Image (cartoon, rainbow, N blue to C red; front, side):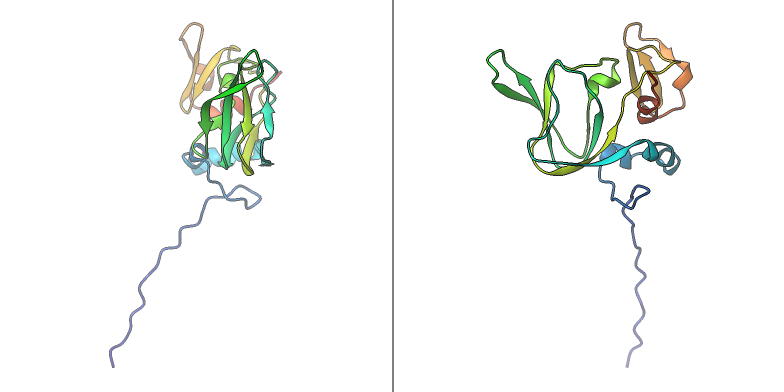
Length: 166
């Protein structure tokens, strides 16, 4: 009788936040372990409901969302009140782009298209960056001058966004 040898298996653990909730957002999954440990404590895991309006066109954007599960529609609102979907965000993205370029309100309605989950980031102003910054993983650019902000050169985009102060 031939001896059976065990085939080694590699268990791949799905990344999760500090509370054990599984992370599926592609932006958050792309962060290093060190970046995650700095950023996840600043984000709030939230459950989203069908047709929940995250913000209205022209109103103050209170927070941005890293979609974990579900879909979020970006809707242009016509003068007669009708809407046209101009964007769709899933777990690959972030809802709240106007915040990242320094705006406090946006021209579109942002609404969920089903139940889902997200990590919510609360916007604040940075004391070391101008209010009109475009941030990315390696730093930020002032959108008015295209000058690189050296104060946040080593910070990831999410950290720059979540470290703003009023």
